[in-house]
Length: 247
Length: 146
Image 1: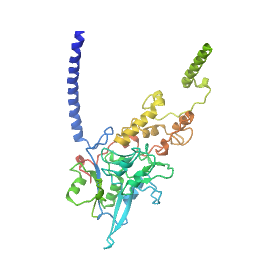
Image 2: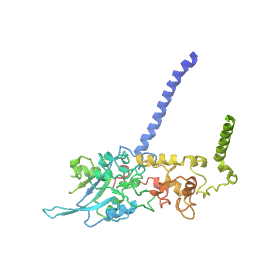
Image 3: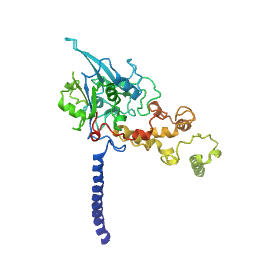
């Protein structure tokens, strides 16, 4: 009896000692791995060490160019129609200064707010923000109430009214759910840029820079640090992930 | 009276046992079980018996991990199921009554709405390619976003 009484705490101490050693070993390679990784492994989830964001330079955005919109439609399987019941994840918007007549053209989409109103109002928790700041709709729990569409100051969300077929396997979409720009999360997760940014770059405009706002070495962070940029509707204090330059 | 009730209970139990064992006695049961096409590859990611009962749990777990946490492992991904089990004729898991998912689900009378949103045919990019991180233009170690 006394033997077993004595052996127990010892066993526990041993266990703690060995587990400490194991933790040290795994921590070592873990840290090393993080240092050399090109992009995160599939089993690694989105992390709050990143915050994905975008800077859009409206002075570089081509008037009449809608390559970003077309690329988005192709990547995400949208019809490209612009009727009141069609999904638009990114739109080209022309703004005109009425006093001077100066017209600017810029892409507008989900701004991936830190304090997203759509996430706030969602009654089922379907509207959600990932650890890395990407705002998504979980269609598995979306009931299609469209409250988030009302709440969004940027009119960034669409509702799917009709049954869909032949979806892109990487971008499931269906009738009865709200949807919006995902920053092409399927591409970001494998270390690529969103389709719109790639298209803008291919066109030679380079009006969109995408990257990690938490990484001071990323291009987007560097440009943001050295140039003046604004949030659209900054008065709402949403801390948007998308910022604009030149408006 | 009590004895009769006991007999009835025993008979019911035997009946239930027979129902459970039905797949093993296909011919004897006299029910046309769904004929499923064999998927690609040697074997499924889990045992067939386990998958019959638990595939929905695996898929539910995976969907939450992938969508909400951004974990993109491929072992239990729905896209992986589609890639292996798409029918030879239709190229889909749910286009006709013979296709893998529909065959069983119509037999079991369980409605499935996965295919309202998810693609029923494999995409151009295989599930393994999709999960494979490319040399990333997003990470500073490879020169930053250009």
